[in-house]
Image (cartoon, helix red, strand yellow):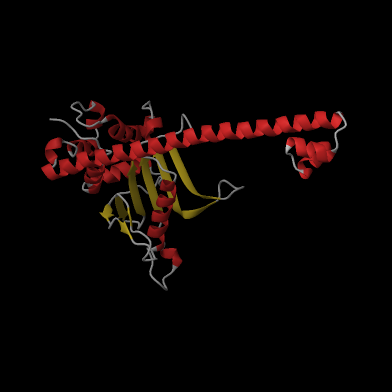
Length: 292
């Protein structure tokens, strides 16, 4: 028996989208919730977030749910980082927030929306930072912030398991995501000691999936590899073009500096401005700036 990778779109949605106790434990471990307000129950919601304008594309999140306090939680697993991802998660959270109340109803009915995003690539440029928490904060008074929207991006490659003390459950959930690979056969005992994580591990067993689901699982990896290849090609092309542009710019700058040096020598030898302009190819404005 072997286990599937929990970061795949098929497995992630099955583990967290069909096992409420698993999702509750996961959210409580990773979200910056008030200490006296943990999530105790959830109700799954439609993952489709319809835009206000019909011409805009429909946005779909991986997991969307609400709890007994009315708070909404959006959960995304992102294997490939893109700068546009931040805009997408902002759009989804704002859409979920604004759709809580109908026309004519009071704004005090709005409950917070938390956006939790697991990113399996480096994106921040920070070596030791893996937990990125964003909210609307006063620019000069850090303790003041506007409630309603909070975003958490977990930079999974930067996470290194260590002694987290009372945050041990957080470390274990991230180990669940990071350490279990495709066709893993051994699961660390520490993960199985937590009932919810054990349930999540069991949901990764290859025998829990139909043939059609396994085909979709493999196709998803094919899509990811194709996208990564296209991204790498684009980056490689961009670097080559940048080097080429740099060389061309360098040559142009070198030619200009050479002409200016010739112009200085001609002027020192008593040549007129008209003669210098004709010999060097520099225009009158360039020569005036040079000899100003």
